[in-house]
Image (cartoon, one colour):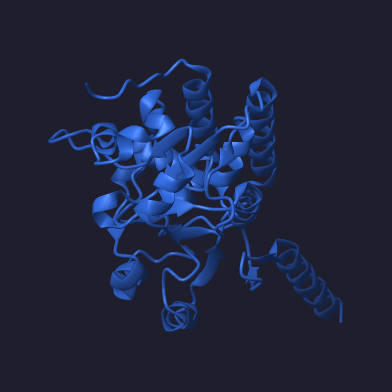
Length: 300
């Protein structure tokens, strides 16, 4: 009888321990995912999520990364897997992850279901604005058991943004974010995006605040709105005109206020386009540019 009681007690303690370890997180699509314990083997397909993992001090949990994940440098040692339309489930499963973190719409519903059927938890992130970045940080922190570090990271970002905003002067001037260059079809950042929020943070108004989200626009619209500042996120690979030179050299663009004043800035593409911790660096660079520390004169 004593032996039976002892066995039942041991079983109860085991179940209680398992329950204590189990946790449920809600991803950014509202899906609830039960975790038995903090994940120690993670595949992250999106660059911003990889950056968040390392910023939390959880880079050692990363066993696979999407092909565009390239920061910090340590992540380059982690095996690459295809993502997006080229997602290869066999590559991912071969790494034996407990969790796969992906972005909204980057993969198909069928791929998510296949991973879950194979016993892999799928977490979806979807940060579109700065508050969304904070949510993504807290979500990923919960997945890897770094909640304290997550709150500290969010707090440091909030403090940095507050400092930048405190320096800004509301000039009433406008900024146009060129997310995609003319040769590929112009796209910009409208309201509801983190770039729009960065504009307000540094004392500028988004020239396309009436557009929602990330949107295609026309060259004529840019010329009509005549922005005071232009920020391009095009990357330069060392050949031909720089992104700034290409913009100021466009026919008709020399009449824009931004070009006349030399207010055309080539921001670090990865810092300013990834919804992650380095948005602080992007905001600081933009603030310094507006304050006059980074003045780019137009080509002669």
